[in-house]
Image (cartoon, rainbow, N blue to C red):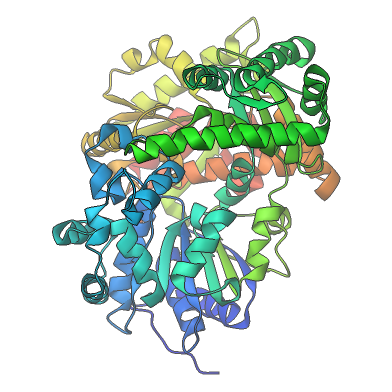
Length: 629
């Protein structure tokens, strides 16, 4: 069969082979798992190949992204492809203040979740309630939608540019994006639009296709297993219960069933949380028996399982009524009672084969039903016409495809076309961040780690990132005045830092020659930001980012062992290697970039995927590398 050629650039080495592989896999309806190194142009080649593979059919390409910045890149690539073929690339983003002109300047509404904002919008769109109307929705006439489609076809705007266009037209960009999907060849959207079933149904309807007509490209696919576990994990905290109790008292403590009130249920949950900590909690988090919560509720309330579910359904209704009243007052429809009842119903519905049940301590103790098995949601890939899973750090590919349960996948790897001499990765042989060594009474390991960081940073005047395995170890370095000793401009990644503040920090870091960045391996910086040229030249990886031993980690190891026969590798080692490779990948973003990474952990020797060599004198090796032209 002869396929069209939509690739808008001159091929780099290997790119034509990737286009051919992706195009044929898409056309033939296969799942493709692909590791594609830096410089292979994953976005452009996958978009081009997928569009070639669906040419002449009703099928549409859905490009799933982890970050908003990637959606901008997809729009830019669509402009280039549009020079060869007519293409309409539409972008969907979660409902929020940035996609809603009405909410943009309302501080209260800006804190709402997508679900809460969706409920409020649904009411305002009806326009026949006391909540009033949404003029931005009312302005969405057929003529304005046609104008949006024409603008998309001619300009290929990124999401920000499209929002500005809608703002000038006085229309809602979120609702306009929904209407445009039916005209699009390719749609970019966050993971949630495909992986959360309730959202996916609407999303496919807006696009005008069914699953069998969808070709799904997954960007940064190494994040998918953890993401799927997270969206199927249910959690409630002591603080959440306190907020629920306060709300119930404000509502007059409604009766639910046989004289039992909302406050009775919440206070019972508070008592159970205290008791389960005393009985089972020995570490940061510990397992509790699968049927513990249900049995405790039955015993304390004197009810059957059937009655308890009815009780919780009634409690859910109370929460919905609270949310509805707020919605009618044009306020954020948030109800803590609703959130708690949803948690309890979800917990009781979890299967022992797919979830484990935990209690955690600390300042805000919690109950958690943690998902071990991502296959239930990932099964949707097997219903689509084709799926393409891409990342620069996806190996071992068979482990990824097994974890998601992909049917008969094609596996392939393409190395970076850039010179291997531009990147050097080494490791030291006398330190690690192994818990028993790092926290020994002697403290020699920790002091040597500090000395390595200080001497390596000061050995060359280059923009440097120090990637820590955890925020707690980074804070320990800060408390010990390491930033002061370095005597450099230091920038920090904090766990609770707003995205806008983080981007401001990164802008300053990039522009400040010789500055130092303290970040976390597996965090927002190591996973998603680019530092081309001299913006980042030296990366110091402080230890292997294994998770701290816990009941949750033990449960995941046990699950992977029973299913794959290699529990530690699947649950702990492979994710840690991927995190390190992502951090190292920040150094080389073009064929002209040069960079060096030093891993401060002798355990890197057992990780062949890192291609790291032992360094007897890491400081001398760093100086030598940067002296070479």
